[in-house]
Length: 313
Ligand SMILES: [Zn+2]
Image 1: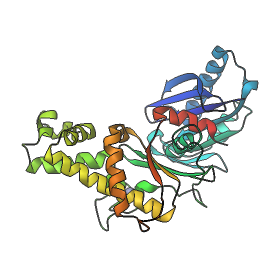
Image 2 (image 1 turned 135 degrees about the vertical axis):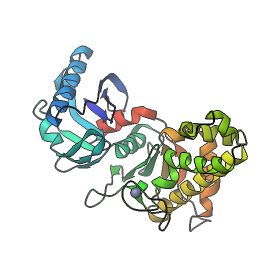
Image 3 (image 1 turned 30 degrees about the vertical axis):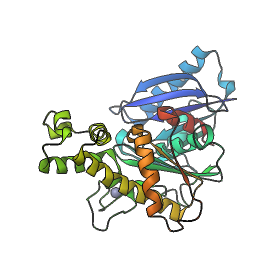
Image 4 (image 1 turned 90 degrees about the horizontal axis):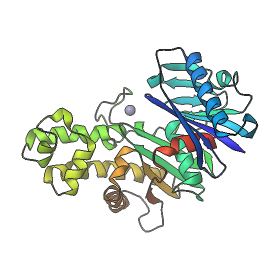
């Protein structure tokens, strides 16, 4: 049997036909169109799925289930998407709407959570029974897998690592709180810290890389400059690594998973990032002389969204 996975994002929707081992056999995509009502958006997705199945030579009889990852919060029991701000969805009956087109089980969950599931089935944490996936991009997303199953909490509102508070009365967050992990460990945080430093250290090589325009600073510029030894970029990078390492240590102290997986755009910094976190996080864990989680980089890249969604059950 095969499964359909949808990775629903604010700009595009990636769709795949996935086998039991997590290989993507067929792909399709469509542009996210938030100008139409929810039911029409689902209609477009259903058409795209049907065309992909038809053109691939498979039939609906070969499909066991349909799963979707969304950048928001979903109720796994009812299949309702509670919030999905990028798509303008609020309390939409996702499963019910899809079932109008397909007589199959339909599942929906948070996109970082499904990416974590994908890594735990077909990626770097495959074979482990517990893992925590952290996606480091514009914001911070996370997925918790315990005993091979997604853990989103007793009420489905857990696994929001990005909004765990790291600093008392710290930086204001989009969620309304202050000092959230996301304000210190994301690409957005790297950019903010780099801009602050650049006003004091215009001699930094980052200034050339952004052509003297602080609006052009991005995480890659900062990380590349740090890698090349620019002292101002190194300062920003060390601060970011300290925050990320403390977050990793918090996960270990609370959950103690077998593996913690770092993914998302910033994790493309590769071993430069991984080595820095591996060196720093032991400073902050409680049981320093006992074994603890391995820290690894995600392996499935952007495919994790499709694969994990297809794996939902
Ligand atoms: Zn927050």
